[in-house]
Image (spheres, rainbow, N blue to C red):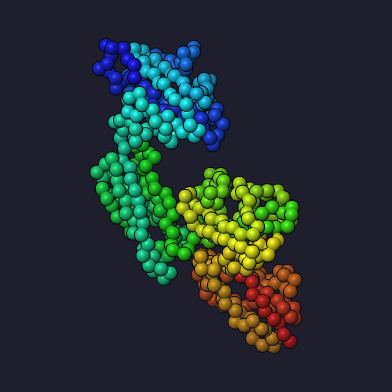
Length: 470
């Protein structure tokens, strides 16, 4: 930092450069580039002037707040308390060294930056002239490098699971550590994904703390500390998986369909919670499965493919969700596929020449060849099935007892009677939490011979064949 000699005592009050991002990788440079300046409310001036590589300077009004971020378009201004934003037309050099200068009143600062690395920001170490590569943090402090930052964070969180598939559920023992503070008020939110119920409370924690949660299935855990100058370590938002049970599973794989049908994979939400597609991805295969607003509903199946238009044209019906993703190519003779929630692997499948004969697909849940897009009939042991279906008989006689079915479920289940061609001839709803027997009018509505009883919740369906005899 270069200041006039007689102002050396007021170093802390002068504005100075703290971060540059010259070469973002996920967005165009004009959208992602930024320069960040740290301010001190004790100092003020008429304007801030900047110059790059000795070229003509440009100025912006001196802002109020604790930080100023320079961007190319106000649409990309970061938000937050104490953060000001200004627009500049000057591009940041991204393939060579560059020098920057800042002047405000009687203060001046300079930065000599080496050649950038794609996707990495230059972060100043303290108030020295030492610049290091670090993840970008536009609009807020980086407590790992900046001095005097108010920061209370979650240094680490680990979990241990105890118990199994019982009515009482599992116990998740969670241990965490605070950094930068002796104690804090911790917001604790948890959701048992098998019930969909959120629970929330505030707990006072100190140093090394321990929490305990009980859930029947996997647990969504969200821990949050009060916002401070370095919010990056204030929140833990993750899944705690029950062993052998995933809230989202790969339910069907078509790794070698008949040309020109594109390869596709079916993913099924076996939980009772809406899950964000923006947190899901095929591990090591491109980006996430959707944008921030996109989600997959409870008991819903989604088809994932490189060419959604071609797959839709092949299927010929519209009542199935298809999402276009960059998933690469699947090996026809043998391969594997893993599904991640952020960086956590939550399900994986593999196949070889004995799994399914091309162009057949297969169900990893049932371990059989399958071609039922948007239809999930079995979850195996990897996810809890949403209901159980019991029939009084599989053979019904015209002068015998009526056919009755019973459904045990925590949600409403749609019951249907289908004829031998699969056409609906009767429909009813089995209410949630009601284990009563329902009469199915197969004698009046069915046909002699084979008929079917269907029970469906979301995209999960069980179909049982019955015979109507004289």
